Image (cartoon, rainbow, N blue to C red; front, top):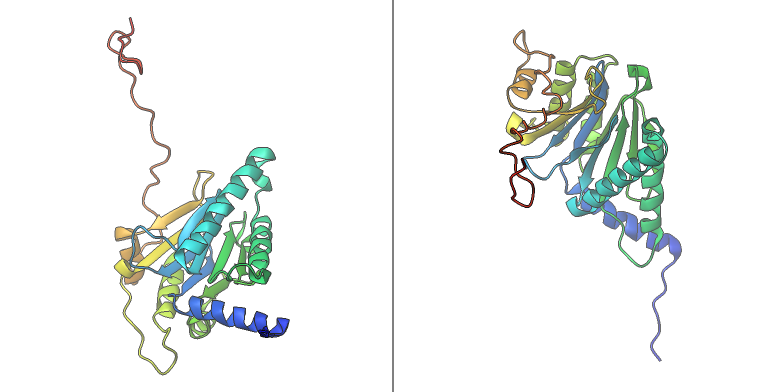
Length: 269
């Protein structure tokens, strides 16, 4: 009679944790920190289509490292949660804490389930408050653990070395240009104190903000092109000022009634 192998629950959980950590360690890091005008997201990402940083709702942003298909599933689930709650109750009822709790329950259930592998992801949910003191950053790990970070959070395989650089340079109330340069400088030191910093240009970065000064209800904006180049350059030519916000698109012009066609292709009189 064949004997079944036995492993204690503690050993199983250790193995699952080690599996998830190894998967996360293969990904490039992400830095999220607060500045005087909102919340900044900076990720090392050369792809222009597969984003590590995204919008969830009006004042909520999302950042992740690990397996793309897994954190993309989480991002989509977060958008559905926020849209449903905002529609059923009120838009102000959609909060970062509520979304973080929902993610924690989902990740914890997947991690403790024996039927599927744990998610190889770490995520951050950031909420923009009315003032810098009320901004919130929640960091969630593969097992559903959630932490309320103070001022900044770092995820990825080299999080310890990058966190140390951020800790030394971070100051509450930093302007946007200083915050961007600190985040990029920290990402370039992922090799540790004994390794030379890498050169990270604008083409290798994905940068976005939750902008408190934006007049539209949706506060998420991506930073790229000349705006990002100017922030990285430093010196007097760098500017914290965002380019003009395009605002909502104007509705298309309606042709005169005598030439307007219906969807069936008939001319209206």
